[in-house]
Length: 497
Image 1 (cartoon, rainbow, N blue to C red):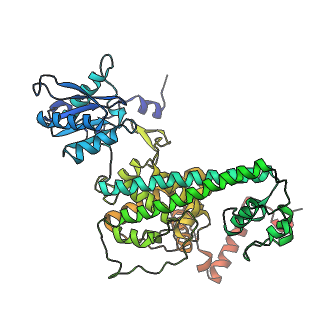
Image 2 (cartoon, rainbow, N blue to C red):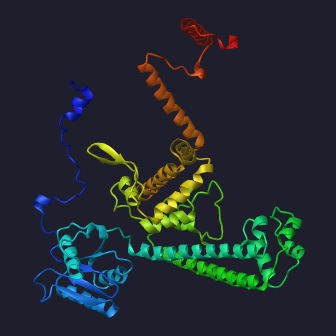
Image 3 (tube, rainbow, N blue to C red):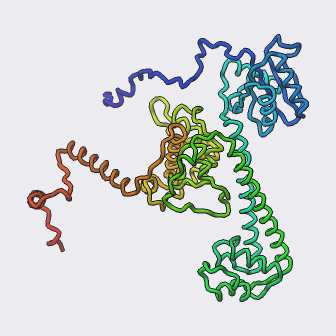
């Protein structure tokens, strides 16, 4: 039985390819890297701490969760000569331990993902967990999770709290619409936003006791396109007392959340001021924006563009689809220092936006990327969705990818593109300049023409641009087509039935 050439090739042993190490430890020469290391297993009621043998009578101790217990832990670690501490990022239990040990005692504390320290040999217990974490950290086998600088963490805390308040406020808007539907008041059908100027005037008039739909409709703003009669028709509802009182409570909650959001905006502005200034806006002012930035009630009420320009040194708002909120989310989640990521590929992989290729043995096994929940990546995905109607270079690229790969993969690819632009801006201070959708179409046409010419050259053919054809070329083309039809015995289209 004879085998084909391809089968014989597959039967041959493969050559062993050298695998990149990517900073992996050399297990043949494994030595202690952190001799003064400790490991902590965190819990809700107590924490177990392990130190190297010979530092104390007991190398494992249990401490409570109160602040006095955490300071006692720090004093004990200092008496044992500990320099660095490793702990798992379990819930939010690590936050006070991390801040006290690092801020008050000056230890080098690292957070570790539980998946790197979960394969403990033997039966699992709290004592063995802290000892296993200390052992791995002593040999340098635990990669530290990323945590930005302390001043960035303060801004991030306020910004995350603000995001939750905005989500709660949106829920109250949905509840108001629900109560209006039960009263058969269709305000949301004639007004684009029931929490706008017209909507709030009408809602407060209803709660004040006004029931005449004509008087309610006359409260509309001049910018509302619907006529007064149609608005009055939508406001003739069934105003039952239980629905009105529920609407009053929901509206009070919404206004209370709006006041909280305003206070958090002031805290974010104050937290941004102490950050290091990379460029002085007074000496080198910002250029005027090419388009008027879109604003809504969820946009911070201070000059975010100038603050971001001051601390980053570049105008990130020049990138299409990057709003003030998106930029603040990325900056507070990733920080201003890009040195933790060697390349832009490391940065996008950390965000959960890699190309999505998983190879083993030289073959692609799957094209689905890892499931990583990252707030910055989520914000960039939302920003990428707004590129669909953008008359920019990125907008044209998104529309082409959407038609070729589908919307889901196109959003992922453009979110990765935005992440790379931000990485280069923060690390190399590269200012983004948009060249427009026409430039992208021209570049795409040039690449397609170059590909067709190379393909035609391999087949012994020639590609001629119609714009560059002369009358002689057209005559030769007509003669060549006629000869080809005669040779193939093809009936001309004009003589076909």
